[in-house]
Length: 516
Image 1 (cartoon, helix red, strand yellow):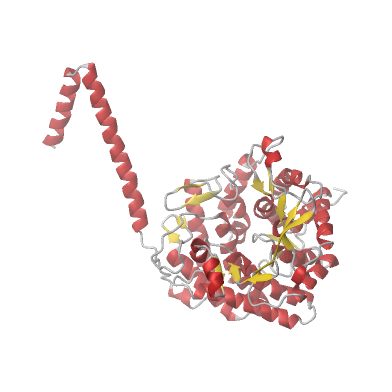
Image 2 (cartoon, one colour):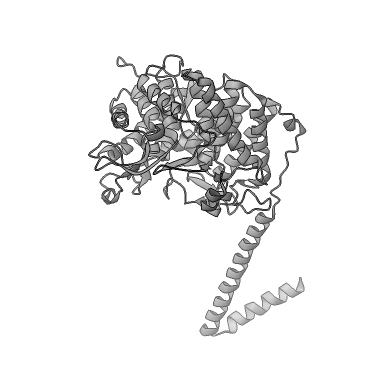
């Protein structure tokens, strides 16, 4: 105590007896000392966070009994853990870095505060009965969400599937016109992308009107992206009464109908300026998922979609999904392709097409393959890309071979196969996924991906992606829910895990009444 008193008295004396030059020196030393202390503090805090144990076990033994009620409670707790820390630290931004506790700027929606985590989480919050969080989200959307000032190129596909669709989902669930108004706002910002000679949209769009960036946008568009806009644009026309949205995706449909499809698959890229297919690379992608679900969404009246889907399926005989390029198959598969297991089984069950049992078996085999990619890793998490031959394995970048970023497609397929077959293994696999995520991805302030699924001491990527809350946790929650919770008889899921009502069977299909 006397020591500190002496130091203070000495500093006081030095200050009042010093000349101006000495005082400047004292101030500089003080600022430098404070700076060193602050930097040391933040470095120490970061080291402490990194030292937190990642292997957080599921202490509740009842979870190991796979009790559905307990599993839903656990997944709801995971949602709240992810949500609470995002809301507390970076509210209104797109994504969260839970280790460094700051904003993640490297996502699909650039640097603007579009609230991607808020919007993608809307239907998950609604399903879980998190009304307080949902009300806060609605308030933010009403007061703060706008694309008017976004002077940056954004993906048409991501805007549609991850921002537009949740608005439509909440409008269907609640009838709240705010969500439809915001859906129209987003769609109207996307429409300029369709202003091309072929009427196929560019891959990117700049939402701000009269932006000088628009003239620099590429004319090459991805089939998997522009072919997957139908569900949202069709339904938006149905609920708003404005036909322009449906007309835009119908134009895409006509282009696709005229296309030659090697092995039943579409080429992956299209030049929107000259109307030519680019880089003759073919693969199984979300377009086929959209074809099947467009038919289901229409109340099974859109026969063109059903016929195109059946033609593609009849040309395929696989146990994994690979890329076809210039007559050669590349024997590797991405985590994002794992939706195809559910696609084949759902397609076989819905269409009862020729040899439907065969395609149901293919879907089950694809699901086994994706589960194996999880089960064969040291962490029981699946890599971003995995191969089936040694040659293909060597062609994959090490990061892709080892990286896991909380993606939803495997959980999506588990849900579809559980709902259709009720085989207990799919819930068991869902339990395994929950346990692995808790053990290796949970941090004190949220969830992150991991850099190496084959290293149990792997470092984290420090990104909690919005689709983890908006899709992965939702699929897992529904996996342990009753079949009538978002029933596949009444709803279809889009490519980002958000659901829209089926016409003619779902009372929440809020078709516009011209007399209103």
